[in-house]
Every structure is written in structure tokens, then in C-alpha cells.
Image 1 (cartoon, helix red, strand yellow):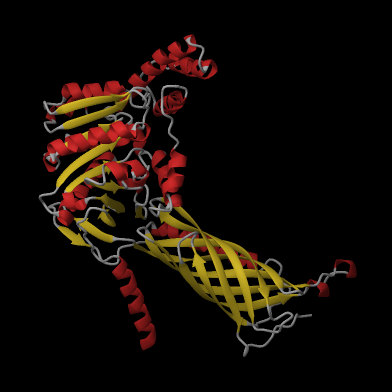
Image 2 (spheres, rainbow over the protein chains, first blue to last red):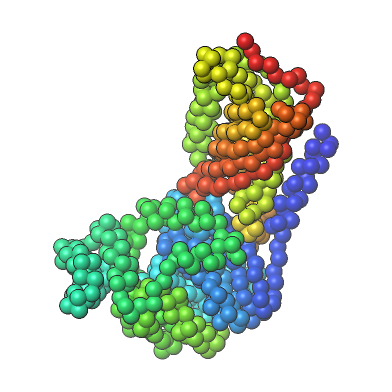
Length: 347
Length: 212
């Protein structure tokens, strides 16, 4: 019996040692920790130069996509050599874990999660740490929620929005309009006529007041439309994941099932009606807006609205002429230059 | 965890396994006890597995079919208990106990195939320091952070029984298992695992003979 107890104690010690706190300040750090909040244990992977005490919190898209797919070789070499990036897997996304926690999958809870992620980074790496947040796609909505709530923006030095949306109803309207305008031009140029006519037919038949189903269909057509444009540097998510999966220990099946769950979760119906346009006036900190010229999913006019409504002169908007909805993958040189300059200026 | 769903899942699976194991019952022979140990690789991630299996029945179809149908192989049925673990860096360590039912078909040459469904309980340990922050911003570390899950496993494999020709009391095997854990973030989590291992037949347990 004593031997059995000893074995159990040794096993517990082994697992406890895997979870021992380790905080590293260096120029090439890679470490992982978790934030446990409201039924979810969310993975945060910090990569890069933590000695700089400057952190970029990456708020991924989706909802439900993981964050580590953004950890490309180019970003490692051109951003993580100077600053650290905190790749945060939101609840029910990527490598985040939990039991029956679907009831907590909503935007206010995720906004609270983001606030605690920033608090945790400052706890681990020092209260004098400079934190920036970067929201991509759905991450734009989540960071808009964070930035316009309470005094949250005082926790960060700057906000970067990449192909993001602060207003889903407006987003749908702009996507439809862009699909119609560009679609008609492409048909006139005799390019992908069959595909564009299908899109044009749908957009003409659905003029506004979109249901969630219509919104999803518009997004699907918007994703397709980007691939019909010769000017766009095409990006393949699956190919990108294949190149990094083993290096960063991506839990592939967790990513897939979390994505499927989140993508079909009930809170998407609420998101479809969510907007922060009326609260943008609250934002007074430096802001960088990066949009793809051929982003049909989150058209650049969303960025223009943010640019015009925030109350700061420290703002900049950049349009990539070769990007669609994934600026950081499709125009990585411009992306890294702009992010580097922004962080260097305001950290 | 939704306890009601968990209990229903376990009950349903136990009922299914019990029904399956009795479906072609000819007669039970209590018998052999085998010890199993294996490298339990979850794709590229390491792990280990230990288990015992207890023979509940052995069938030689040659004794029951017509002469035209006579085939030279044995079918064994076992119940098993297993303790398994794999390590996925920065994600989790998963430690799971399972009970299962195994059917193994062994040719006279010693080669065998097997199939085994199992049910059990999983406990994960997160692959990194886990923090909690209260609404006042006070940070604390959560010890032994992780989750319990109900676990189902279905596996099939091939192997070689050295006792058939060489009269050695062990078998080598390779087996593919698919694990399903529930409720994982309100959905399921699937994970493939490959076992490569050894089964040792305990000598002091009497050798099974087909029941006529």
C-alpha cells in the first residue's frame, strides 16, 4: 500500500513539475502558460524578445481559429527579433481546453478574457511592460469591444487593427457592395464570369437586413471573391499550417473541433448584430489600421470609419495593394515594416 | 462537467460493450492472464501503456463448422484493464484508465489481428503554468490544472504470438487506437494513438483449451 501511495505521489510530482512557473527574459524566448477563466483554460504562447519588455498580444480571427498559425517564419525574423508576441488562443479555440463551457462563449466574456491576458502578461513580465494589441478579422470586433469598455485602453500603448471589423451589420453591407461593384467590373473584363455571375445574382437578390444565414453566405462569397483576383497574393491556410504544425506542437484535432464548435455556436447570431461604431469616439490611444485592397470579407471602408471616428491624432491607415483578408500573410514585408514602426514609435 | 450526460454516455457504452461481448457466446472458459506493456505514441508525441487482459473465452471454429468450413485459427475473447499516458508538450499530459473488451483472431502460424473497444476516464494536466485572476486583478497559480473527461477508445491491430510455434510466452503487437474525449470545450476531442508493445502470458495461469 505504501508503495502504491509513493507511486501516485511521484506521478503527481511529475505532472506538477510540468506546470512549474517559468518566466524568461531573453531575446529568443519560447514559453507557454495558461489563463484559467470562467471555465476555459486558454493557452498563451510567448515568442520572441521578452527582454525588450514590449509585447504584442495577437487576437486571432474566427471566432474559433487558433493563434499560432500567425507565427510565420517572416514574423519570427522581423518582429519577434525585436519584441515578443503573445499568441493567445481564445476560449474554445486552438489549444484552449475545458469541459462544458459553451455557455460562456460570448463577446463580453471574451473581452474580460483579453483584459486578464494583458494583466497576466504584466504580472509575469513586469508592470512596466509595454503592451500592444493586434486584432485580425473577428479579433477586430473583440479588440473594439475591449478598447471601448471601461478604462481598458489605458492598459495598452497602442491598438492595431488588421482586416478587422468593428461593426458586423455595416460589414455585411460593405461586403455586398464591394462584391457587386468589383463583380460587375470583372464580368466586363471577362474574368471568372460564371463565378462572379453567381455572386452578383445572390447580392442582387439580398439587398439588406441580412439574416445570419445570409451573412454567412456573403462571407463565403467574399472569401471566394478574393481568389478570383489576379492582383492578390493568394494565401492557403492549410499549407501554412502544414509548415508549422510540428515545430510549435499544434494540437491539430483540438484546433479543428474547437473551430467547428465556435463557428457554429449560438453566439454568432448575437455577433451578427453587434457594432462598436457608436463608441469609437472613446478611443484616444495610438492606432494603426492595416487593410487589404481586395479584402471582400472586411472591406477597407471599415478601417476608414475607425480612422474617422477615433479621437486621436496618433493614427495611421495603410492599404496593401496585393492583399485580401490576410494582410500579414499576403504582404508580410509591408505588414512587418508598419507594425515595427508603430511599436517602436509608441512603446 | 455535465454529470448527467457523462453518466448516460458511460451507461450506454457499457451496455453496448456487454451486449457485444455476449453476442456469439458458445461457452465461457476462465483462463489466461496476460500482461501488456507498450509504447503509446500519439503520433509524434511519446507515451506509455500498461494493462492486463483476462481470457474469458476461446473458440476454435474448426470444431464447430462443417469440414468444408474448417479453418485453422483460434478466436480469443478478453476483458482488459489499462492505464495509459501520453505527453503533448505545451498542450497537456493525458493520463487515462480504461476497461475494455478484446477479440483476437490468431492463425496457426502465430499471426493475429485484434479489435478492442474500451471505455474509461481521462485526466489531463495542462502543459504550462496555469494562472487565475480575480476581478480585483489578484493573480494566483492553479496547481495541477487540468480536466476530467469521459473517454471512449476503439482500436485495431496486428501482432505475432510466439507461443504458437516457438513456444515462448509472449506476443508482439502494433495497434492503432482512436480516442474520443467528452465533453471537451462543449464538444469532443479526437486523438489517434499508435501502440507498439509486448504481451506476456503469465505461465502460472493454465492454458486455455477449446470447450467442446
